[in-house]
Image 1 (cartoon, rainbow, N blue to C red):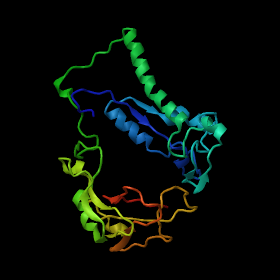
Image 2 (cartoon, rainbow, N blue to C red):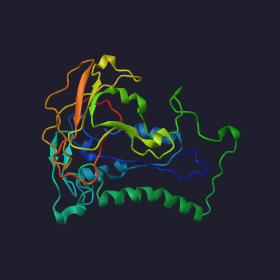
Image 3 (cartoon, helix red, strand yellow):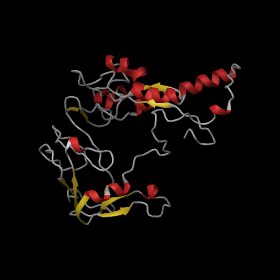
Image 4 (cartoon, rainbow, N blue to C red):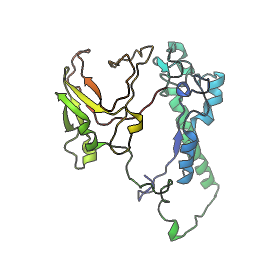
Length: 282
């Protein structure tokens, strides 16, 4: 976005999930849990204005001020990841008192706060222009364009996403019904076509083979996966058949994904796998 000739105005908005901020003996509302420090450094490096939900609302959440309460979801229940307890849903008459919709995503009140945070820097800029405040940039051909990558020797990639593409395809060793195909075949680029393993009907399945050996992890070829069942069960409308045991470490761990016939058949449904991520859960 910063490289666009139109030079759009960009602002870095730092979000803060109260119920997912835990650690050091605290199960929610830990102030320094989120990677806000690192993101602020990125904003400073590229000279972006940075606004923070945490800086603006943490004290209000902590004191339980109306509009910023975080102990219930305004529209649905959620999960406190710190102690695995269920976040209750607010009563109909108290919805406006809560910041989050479900314990993670902002509700109408939270979205309004975030909008006000983004409006404020713009309002300040408008006031400065109206008052005749002028700031001249230093003009030097060496300062044109973006600075080099912040992390030394890292490539500059003009992409907003990470793709495994063909590296993911051979991880599937057996499949019935699942096919490796593009989600958007009419697109011109491989990235835009969104290739992956997809199944369309209940009973279709595939089997992946990955290494769960931590010492074998490599950013080039190996994929490391660790699965754990969550307790208590999350009562969402998505049906997932989690294993009830920890995955042991093995260089050739087999994982099976099958589409179950647990819901009424819809006109169009799809299960698509395009990548695997590493996540170690304590």
